[in-house]
Length: 231
Image 1 (cartoon, rainbow, N blue to C red):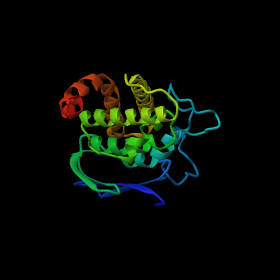
Image 2: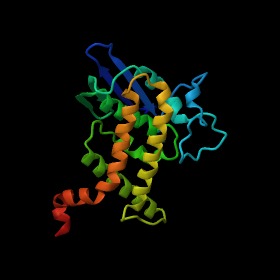
Image 3: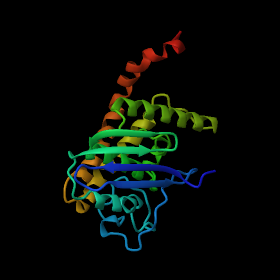
Image 4: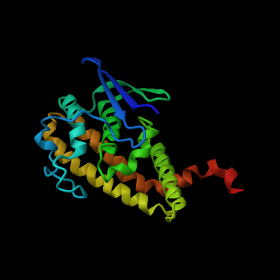
């Protein structure tokens, strides 16, 4: 087994130096492997604007998501969300290239870190990280998330639990994810001179709010693709 599952983001700016962010994930748990900060920043303390749905106990002095995002937040603190950037994302199987805004590219990078840092609310999104699709549309994300959730419930059923064909559990997950996004944006304000960091979180929250509303619509849209199963 490989030591890491690696995801690399390369940002190429027109007027700034190229920046490379290499994320190393444990290949079994998908937990991000980061060097511990000897002196974590004040805004990363768990009790600093703690998320309303956070259930981490007091033995966690720092928010693990904030600690893991601190360096990237610092890198993008002076950038505007609408600035253009060319981005290459490398995963084990392939590479993706896009010309997009900093907001969109940073949102994709931040989403990985938030899901793999040990937040009990966001860890439900981990399987999406293993099959990462950067720059996905809302329809692609809804399809992937529903597929992932149904696979999760199948695994639960195989282990003696109950399935959830109505996807009510998925809606609950995304309500909590949206709450984390909103609260975490308030935490991140102190690390942001301009709006790139904040709007990256806003972009994630838009997806989190839309997906529960799009479940029925997405199913109707893609139903014709499954005609062979419906005969």
